[in-house]
Image 1: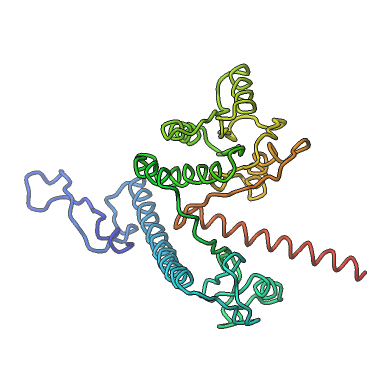
Image 2 (image 1 turned 90 degrees about the vertical axis):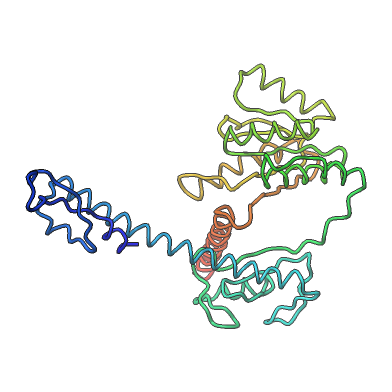
Length: 336
């Protein structure tokens, strides 16, 4: 890409043997050393240097994207093989990994049970037990659970999903709608908080849920009276199954113990990982608080093959690292 940038640079020179010798015309040159182009003004030289630097940086980013894309293709192949296999055994402890138990895939493509992975990551040098590849840095391991397939939907539910036009809303909203329907079918008394960071996404989800016939209210924008009315409706109307909450509104202190499900729609962003995590916990704390009489299920939605998946993997690695450091500090304190 850097070479392409050089080839596209244009040097302006006086046209020889012409009555219009003072007029400058562009001449393509294959490789331009900006410092030797004397006819460029200082500003033009600076701009040209910035262009070359930007193109070089872009080439580096493109190379990184190719690497990430290759890693995703590799992981997709590994996941496909795991999903098709009837039994999956950990190569360290030789124990079978149940499909309802967590398993861990390393960036080198090896699969271990969660317990053996924690042992590997707890060593001074984090190395794969199979190939001795390094397991440091974000995305070194991916932890997942191979859930059994959902029970077949009833005929009426299948027709309902077939008739729904999800295309205009995208795969995430489709998955959210189907998830809420499954939850409500399993527990008709269930109520859910869907927590997002952004107003626009919250408004789009609310519109989609209304179109698909799922009773919902949204707590965003508006005045105090409209927000109070939305909360009252969610608490008292059994048909209002979903309350949409946006982090852009002040949610601290709000008590929604009627909800027994909290859905984090996407990984939140913040000035730091700790702040992003704190934003997410604000939503969870609306239901998990004093006065809650039911078990609360927290569900995170992560879109596979996107930056959301990378963010989630990085935060999982950081959380494990922080827990390891805390354990080391406590161990040192005991020894002293």
